[in-house]
Length: 140
Image 1 (cartoon, rainbow, N blue to C red):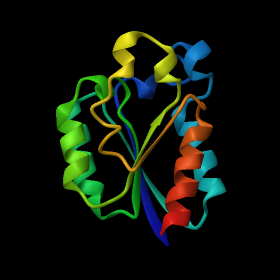
Image 2: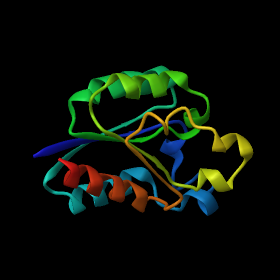
Image 3: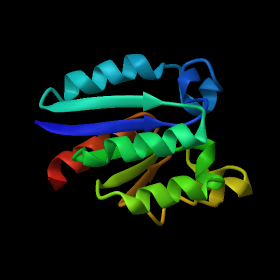
């Protein structure tokens, strides 16, 4: 059985409440149950934090997984530490963003994560997570 971790960054605990026009009306916990149903052959770990250092710790903790789906949220644009953590681990990391960060404010076009990730999916809403898991399952 494959083991894949999903790591979400700041404010993603508010999905379903926070700016539903951008992020949708579904909470992540409900979506996670859908993912677990869609991927019964995959052990999905889940971690969310609003704290940068905790996200770095989670990347290191889940480094033995078959893959990591990471939405660093706002830390994408500011965190050299998260980019460095990705570079330091061997697990493949797929960066996911619910919104199209390239079509938003200029500061969101800067990423300290994308160059270190194996791939990036953005702008496809929550289904982007499913696509990332599909890739990690097929890759292995």
